[in-house]
Image (cartoon, rainbow, N blue to C red):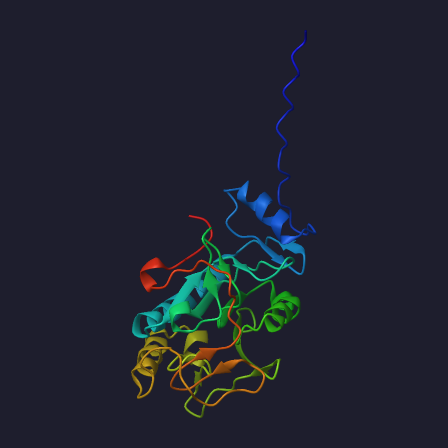
Amino acid sequence: MTANPIPPLLEVPPLRDGDRLGRVEFEKRWEAMPEVKHAELIDGVVQMPALSRHHAVSHFGLIGWLWMYQVLTPGSEGADNASVRFDNNNMPQPDALLRVLESHGGQCCGTSDGYLEGAPELVVEISHTTTDADLGPRREVYRRHRVQEYIVWRVADRELDWFVLRGGYYLTIDPDPDGITRSEVFPGLWLDAPALLRGDTARVLTASQTGPQQPGTHGVHHGTARTHAGSGVSVGKGISHQNRAGHCDAPQSPDETLFGRKG
């Protein structure tokens, strides 16, 4: 009697830029490619852009700015290149993000398998060769999923765009007369964009340290303040969110933060 042959193991196809996949299949292929550190699914299309030195240097500067805010602001958490589950067709990997912790009312949460789920309150993209996508399809995905603020640093243009979600649409936040742009969602998150664009790190750090020390900016938390109609977010002395993802197994303190998908 002939033994039944053992069927060959099914190979997982590799991820390729431009593939059209659902999120479950995207995750399966990505997990089978540990050498790949950057891949996203935007409206069902895989994106795997090469990251240039110009992108990397600018990215490093923005991470320092957000890190300073997190250190000075209880209830906030930053992440670098963390993958975020949105829906069956979208799993972006933003260059940087800042979120309100679940314990403080945040709308984004951590999952038991090491991802983030739901929209972070703030997303940052460094745009060198991806400007059309960052200001087009990617921005639309972030708008639909209610990312409250979205920053695009257009490196080649030496410009920075800061959008806030109001009434379901993104509007530009203009700098104040002193040149400082102030977040409408995160109390005390200040950016001296002209200094950032010309590489004046000292001035950027001065503004980033000054903002969180202003009266009424002692952390992000549930609270009552003026609300942008339709945004689901109260801002000012505190933050409260109405659109929480309710099915995450999430870390509850900065000691359990998620800083990225792969080590």
